[in-house]
Image (cartoon, rainbow, N blue to C red; front, side):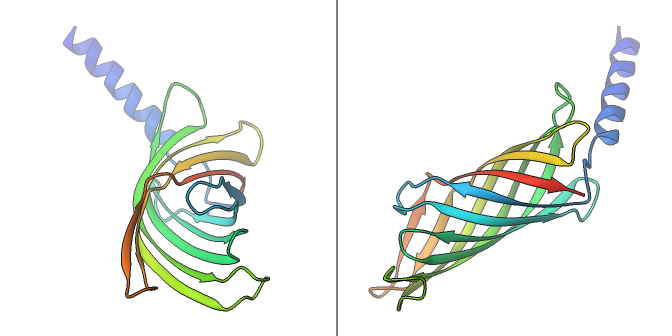
Length: 167
């Protein structure tokens, strides 16, 4: 029994190692549904791999309600899910920096600046025999807001759904 368990474990680890890095770079677009920010977010996302298990998630997002921009980066650990080929989970910490305007046009007056940390947990499915992936991320933010003498916010309702072209 122990020998059989050892063989199954070795095969599972080999399968995980072979499927660890589905691509070297992806570029895509993502959508953030409106929750407390009040507007929709449209992001450009770039994910370069730095090792066979880790990648960096870089994004720039425009929010329609306040003509604000958010720039974010996170260091992610990739965890293949062997149940379905191409399905991967990822988790990692990151940081963000936002510029918020008054929303009176595409270049309204600066209202305030926000910065803080991100925790990212997500799933990505790389569609077999294509160069496309679909990603879903849960990204709670802890933010320091610079307006009105400064205050902190903790936003638990941040989601991102994206489609990426993988190279």
